[in-house]
Image (cartoon, rainbow, N blue to C red; front, top):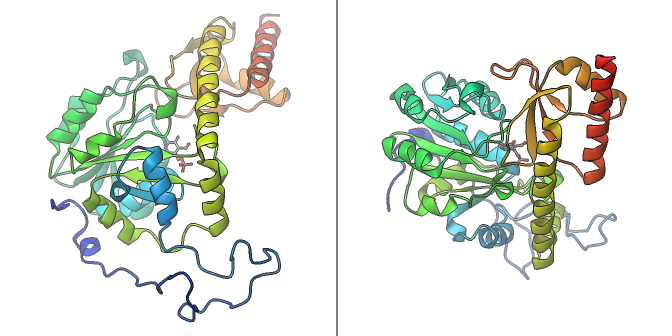
Length: 358
Ligand SMILES: Cc1ncc(COP(=O)(O)O)c(C=O)c1O
């Protein structure tokens, strides 16, 4: 067994909470639960009982979905929770640091700030097609750098980071930092997940989610995929009983063979729509630039973002404004919706162009 030298010593030494045993067909008098079912569930969901401490059934199902051994999977409440758990387990407050490559998903910053962890930024630039500065990342690492977050495909730019670039950082930081590759949107890209690489590298974590391609954002279900040692450290920080029974049941039904086939079909439809929208947006007057995307959204620069957004809002359409983010002046992220929703957006923007021309 390899160890995880970079995690916090006090977390490695932490005594985990010992939950009451959960054994089927026993009289459960060990968890201070109510003996009677609640009237709302007529005994079906057993809501009077605590759920599994860590949801093993769900973990096994997600392991087969991601084609990984169950021991390499930690199920979390959305991949957001995995980000939080990693930062808390690896970084000491006011001592350690993480690296991010902005513009990128903002929750890395939020969880780092909550934990009192310095965030070193290695920006990606619009005039360089938002390519990752691999050497810049390696050069900025210090002895306090515990985690490096790489989002691929990146939110909000939609850019994929080449696997070789990621592995160069993983190799360069072996025994020093853990590289976290956030693959929230990987199903919409033309590349496979890097998940199986965690079997070769003990300083690599892959984050996956059911919120995007699997249409289950409301169920709050994601996973960290890593070597067993990392999974063990993370599970020490994860609270027990955090997955409610109805969520476990709903996700288990959604991940049936049929459910997965439906998601795969829906993803193919969104990719087709994304490519149509990319071409269409480029020829709308009020759009200055659109970046090719490997995700379920497109980053667009407007000639005048404020008036385009006002026109859209007037037509009941929301897009995400990134105007205040460095490199993204006048930019917004447009999620790919249904064909009808996308057409409504195009129609509204075309009208907006006409009004400003007139
Ligand atoms: C890049 C990225 N990672 C992680 C998440 C979190 O997703 P969830 O917590 O729903 O799994 C998001 C959500 O938008 C995201 O864009």
